[in-house]
Image (cartoon, rainbow, N blue to C red; front, side, top):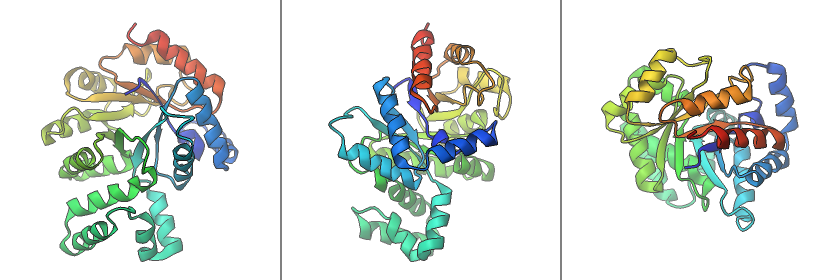
Length: 287
């Protein structure tokens, strides 16, 4: 896995410090072409892994890079699922059955439908989870997806409910069906690391806010430090700039000094900012 991953928050109007900046970004990236242009810039700067949601418009991005594979042979997707708003919108516009047809994988349609039906009748949670994963992965057919993430909205809900078996179900299906590594995004790294260890999920990737000022790091800096030093998982740091609260050089240097960091995920809207982050990581990584 590359040590620097490109995220997609900026494309969908997500900014945790400024609603105005979020609105401006959302307006700028209304067209998928604008998203693709930034991804081309990232690729040109050597940032070739796109850690993304399964938003409908990411399907358009995936289609572009599938059709232009020869120009971007190293471009890689790290999908994160589920994108909850997508399902709500689809049910509203297409109805329950229409939404189901829309998201079921092309291959194994009957098998997927049967699993969905038996799951609903028998309340077979494993069947529902695997059906959901297969539906979300439909847009990435024919593209490399060596890591598949469970989004924090679900990860932390399951964590809070104590439904820990779901994590091993997700991990096992991702590994067996897609030959991919399971990743878990969370707002509470210390708690999740302990749960995954008890569930026997071997060497999982865990993506969480890790930054110098403790911005949105549930449990506090000390608990994060202990987790990074002691648990058998591979941490990926996000929100390293704390939405702009930490100067770039200071932020990257601090994160690169933390133990066992596997990678950093960041978002940017311009080639200059992408190049600057890439240069900083190249400077401080393993220094």
